[in-house]
Length: 210
Image 1: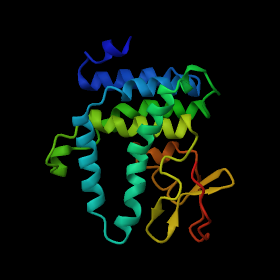
Image 2 (image 1 turned 120 degrees about the vertical axis):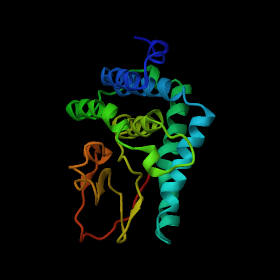
Image 3 (image 1 turned 90 degrees about the horizontal axis):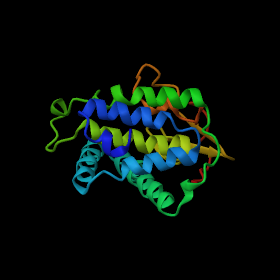
Image 4 (image 1 turned 135 degrees about the horizontal axis):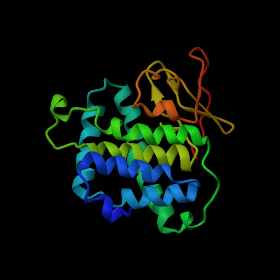
């Protein structure tokens, strides 16, 4: 099934077909190419809806945390999207590259995507714009790129959490305070993240972004 064939399916079937297409990737290059092709179909109107929902999510946070975490949320989605397309256009993904890390975890991630995209009720959130499961899919596409192509944490290195903790890079090994705290939330990207659980009473180390 080609990308053009997928776009003719009803929304839920389309997302499931995309998830199956992602799951067939065996190398970072193959996955990166597929993610870029799917992400390339999003329009300016789509990005306005995605950005609008992100704004509403951030603006509800208290200060000063809101201001400190805002750039990391935008980096997680739009920074990752820019990097994905830059790598795709520079032919980075033409080479197969290394095999995907932790094949079992990757397949579980892909299997989660269809249900995860339909978990949110946009009407219950009372958003002033149409935020659809396809927009939610974008979040998972960027997470797949970050976690399985770049082997980086789903939340950017340096992203702060309440209490003074942050996602850390300790000499190439990632640590996150909330890594193991959302196991009951099946649609959380934390369940598939390469970061390790950090100790709650550990000091925050200096972080190095990749």
